[in-house]
Length: 342
Image 1 (cartoon, rainbow, N blue to C red):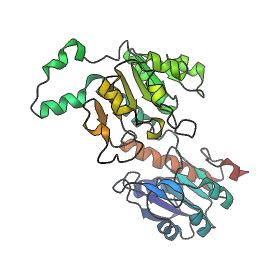
Image 2: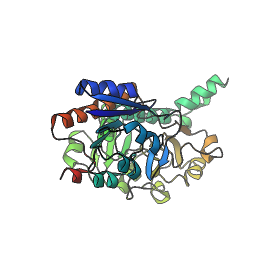
Image 3: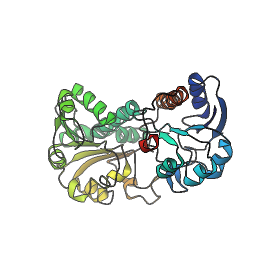
Image 4: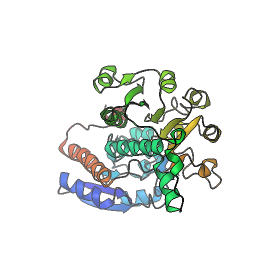
C-alpha cells in the first residue's frame, strides 16, 4: 500500500511516517513537508486553513491510496488528479483543509482526530484564566521594565481567586469538560451553556447547565469553548457582552469567530470588561493598527492553546490508527463524510 505522509513543522512528516509504519509495516511511504506554522495557513483552492499548494500535493501523491496530513489542501482539483486515493486521514479536530463534498464524490473517506489537543487546550485556557484574573503577564512585564507596582495590592486593584468564583463555560466538548473538572477542584462554581451537552454528565462533573444569557449575567469569569459554526459565529456579540457583570474577565482560546471583537476596546476602556485574554482572533495575525494592542488589561497569545509536543505525537498516532483500520479492513472511527461508506 502506498501512503503519503504530508507533515509540517508541528505534526512533522517523520512523526506521521513513523506512526503509520507502526500500523502498516510494509507500507510504501512517500513524504511531503509543508511550511506551517513558519508560514501562516490560509485558504487554498476553496478549502480553509491549509498549507502548501494543490500542485505540491498532486505531485507528492503519485499513485498513493492513502494520505495522512495535518494541513495539506485536499481540494476538488487534488481528488480529480488522484483517482486511486481512497482515504485521507487528517490529524486535526476538524478536516477544514479538505473539500468533503469533492471527497465524497470521489469515493474518498476522510477521517479526523477529535480530542487530539484537548489536554493542551484545556491547560492553556486555565493558564489564561489565571493570568487574567491575577494580572500575571502585566505585572511581570512592568517589573522587568523597572516598575514595582505596589498599588496592585490595594483592595480595588486586587485580583480574584478561582476558589468561590463563578466561572461560565460556553461549550462543553472535550476541552470545556476538562476545564470544568479542574475549576471544580479549585473550588469554583461552574456554569455551562451548551444546547448539545448531556445535562447528567455536566451535573456529575459538578457543574450547572444554564442558558447563555443566565451564564453571562452570573459569571465574573467567562471562557469560550464552543465550536465555530454558522450558528455560533459572533455568538458573543455586543448585546451578550452587555450582560456581563462589571469588571468581568473574558477568555477566548477556542475560535476567533465566536466573539465580536468590535465592542471590546470600548468595554475594556470603560471597565465593563476588567480583563480580556485571547489566543484566537477574527483576523490572524491581528493587523498592525489593532486597537487592543496597547490596552494594559489585554493578554494575547498567537493561537498556541493546542500546541504541545504530546498533541503532535497524539495526532500522528490517531491518524495512523485509522490507516491501520483501513489496511485491516476494519471500520473507520472518526469519519467526517460517512455517506462515502454507504
